[in-house]
Image 1: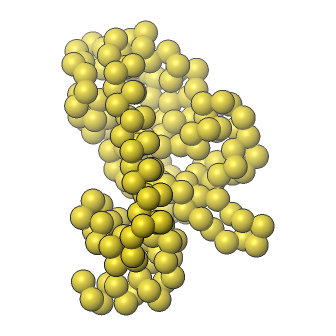
Image 2 (image 1 turned 120 degrees about the vertical axis):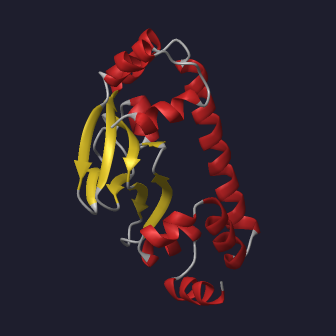
Length: 189
């Protein structure tokens, strides 16, 4: 149940089996159903999620009910409604399990205690945050500076599994294009 988490953390830090086992004691398995909402606007996000299998979507709704996908969190990544989780304030975003998923969850208090049993956690966490920040900036820049074709090609290059795994509606929303445009792009590629 935890090999993917160990692999993920071991990219940045050396972890003994004893340290990893102690850390595993604070992560708990949560199985979700397709389209299950884990956090709604107004909720305080209590958990950080590590996607062991499946995919999470963090999205917002505007006043007219239009969805705006902020992040997609595939296998082997951490995700949550980050501002709500860190500040322990009500979320503006939804956190949804887009497909039946297997998540390793850790509550806020245990998350803050991870350095107690994972001495290199600060380094791993900094690297996680830096990479997620870079990915966010690149996504924002791509929405402003690239064509729909270029954004689609980049998604295929970086996350080809998402195209097959997720509904067209979500992929189109994430790319900032219409479903019709996405359908045309799929036919060309």
